[in-house]
Image (cartoon, rainbow, N blue to C red):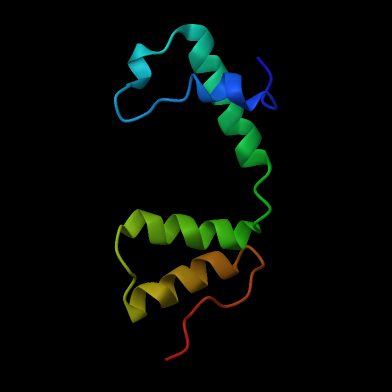
Length: 86
């Protein structure tokens, strides 16, 4: 199953009524292949991905202090400052 044949691939994507455990081995492999292809097309920098992951991990908007910590951690990957202007 190819990643560029989207109608066939959409049929194996889990929706609100389907659990991953309900997928066949072939469907699960296809889903992982799609996920890998989408991840590989991610054009964000390592720094941008770091910021997104850190904010997602918090599951809420970061405080000013948390922004500074995220900034220090993710700027080491070569990106610009991410601290929002006050």
